Image (cartoon, rainbow, N blue to C red; front, side, top):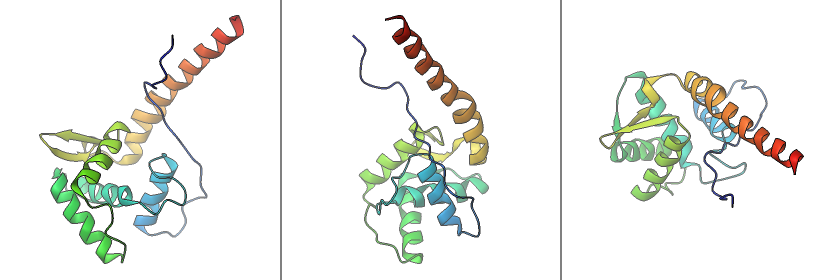
Amino acid sequence: MVKEIPLSEITIRRYEKPYDSSKRDIVRKVCLSLGMLQPGDSRDIIVDILLVLEDARKQKNWLSSFEIRDKVELLRKENSLESRGLAESNIRRQLKRLRDSLLIDKQENKYRVSEFAPISEIFEGKIEKFLIPQIIERIKEYLVKLDKI
């Protein structure tokens, strides 16, 4: 019996080229493109979390979930956005999603963009060259097995 729980999964989407967009809009499209956010979803706190972590990456700062929450709250106020989703439990849930997607690391209850590397490098090394080929290879194994049945 094959278990229904995936070992790994990824959703990827293609959008128009990134023209003159704000940094937040670009991070939003990254989240949408990587399946971290659903199209039309108004609950987009993950965008601000990634934005805060991306800014901290440039200074090579680790941040606690409380620091992230405070910075996200400030960022959302500056952008006149609702403060929904700022509960500590939700912040930690979104951080776990970012960790599961291999974009961020956690050490001693502090978070950072993985190895302080640019997100483009993380995508290329961990997702494009590692995760996606593994998923495609497993799909092919199932297809070969199907052909033999």
